[in-house]
Image (cartoon, rainbow, N blue to C red; front, side, top):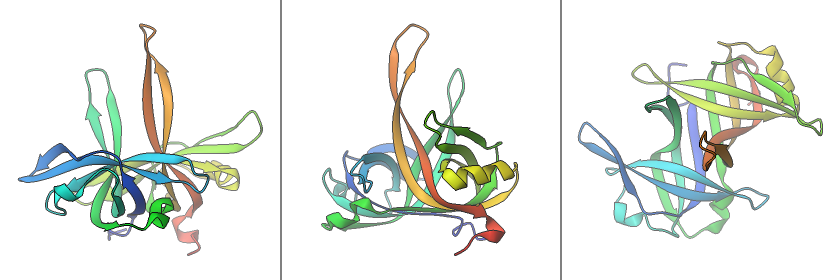
Length: 210
């Protein structure tokens, strides 16, 4: 677990759907945010947030309709509001390729090694399908960690019942977006988007079969 570059790796193909907008600045390095649209095999489209450094790319190349392949990490940070802390997730770009190849629009591969940081929540749908929600903490440099919400199905979900907080796990899946509505106290309905990793392969790190 000492090589932090190996415990959080994401490769995603997508179409840029908005122009870059300034996000934040660290040590005179400016970062910009935009969104990409990526497809599942079912043709459902996920809209995912991206953060990129001005030093990595000519921002004029980030154009709506352009197809890109992104290599990076799935990161989180806590946004403090007046009422609560909000977990904000985004794809942090390490490298980016521009292409005309539409076949990469379904590329969405996320690999993580991290620690279970909340008790897994196992449940069944009304139709009997097994689901588990897991929050995984992934170590980063400078004593930081990324907290990644994951959803597991079937046998993987059932396996979560054997895990406890602090267990080291390794997983593979795809990053997905999910729209939902939240009703406010004044009766107004707010449309929101959640991001999570839909896990296809999951095990204790020492038992993971490459």
